[in-house]
Image (cartoon, rainbow, N blue to C red; front, side, top):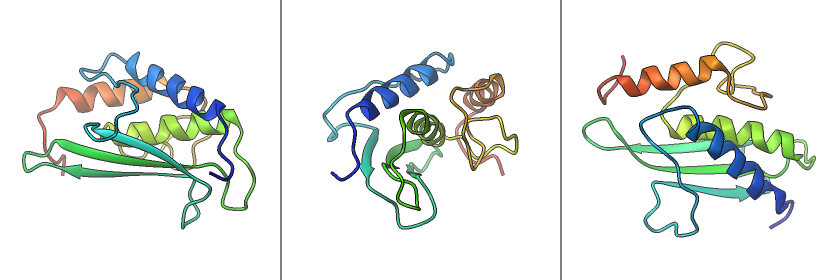
Length: 140
């Protein structure tokens, strides 16, 4: 695929490890069998918008996350190849969405809409832990 680099796999693996270290009641496991996976990540050269990543979630009737499809771009909307640091930031961000987190208003957070964060903040971790301490369902 145009723009894909092998180090992107290591970048995503590192991001998964950071979320696994956040002490949540779920652990993410990297594998190659997408048929039974709850979260499937793919790469595209570019997305159809001004974004570099997307996480599409499906929910069950009890308000729990069912399956998630994450797509990460290998190029910016302007066509520039993403570097490893950027791939880490976008992987951390989209995995956060896959775990059920929304956008943060704080620029330093991984879940900030236009993130450039290279690691989870304490606020990211605390927000995720708080979310997972609540019963399934909408917070609205």
